[in-house]
Length: 172
Length: 172
Image (cartoon, rainbow over all chains, first blue to last red; front, side):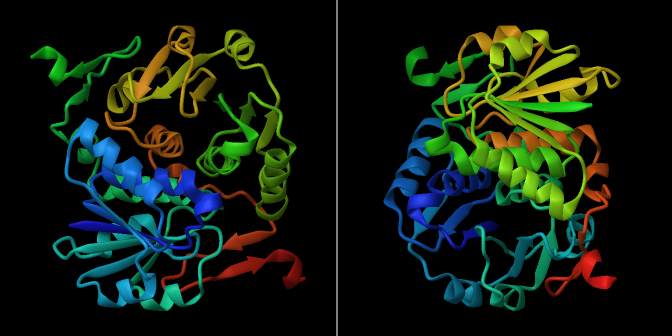
């Protein structure tokens, strides 16, 4: 079980990036996402994707983040520019326990570093929490997450020359 | 040589996501990024990261995208939800020729699919062009990009318990 916690979400500025965080969490094998600031539009977007593409990915917003980190039963991992390397982390983090992956926005409160079990750096250059989350999950699941079957109404069929989408409601 | 082409950039809505695209391109081993719509603030952000963290990553905005794709000398790859799998693509795309990676925003004009040599799908679920680009580059470079030395003034040192940054100007 993997949960993603997005902290520092500002609805006016971060709506699109936080939506990307949520959709990457869902597409790459996490089971749920929690966002610190309340934002119904994020919840609606993710629920709409679930309805069309399947799965039971859960999203909650407006959850106080520090309390959530403290109460989490499992391994707490902060994805950052400053931490142990991704390669080391994937070897050292226990595979069996639930995992909380914390991703921040532009500025992350300093106390996050002390509240978690692992600070993990996906590369040592500034880039993107969306990319950090995607790479962590891809390395964690060793690529298997890209073949996961969500069982949804809409299914995308790999096709070299363009869109092929099956709609199970149209077929019947 | 890898260049990333970001199409469909709307400065008012996409500034943050396009910035993530640019920083992921830079951090994960591409040499340059081209954005279709003019946006000086994106250029300034990337140039500021170059100054502090090193490297010679290039950014241009306001470049008509269709002409740019047609004129590109090399292999043109569109990252999308609809295409051949990432695993197949990494095996089939020639390694020696220059590579243009096209990433769209919310809606991609249908003719993009026909203008490129490969449409590549990073998973078959809706997620994020930032994540798609990161995963493509990580698979393409087989993780070596995460250890690239940019030779910049600021260097982040991997550290399990928090921030360690060396500033070469302060050392002298």
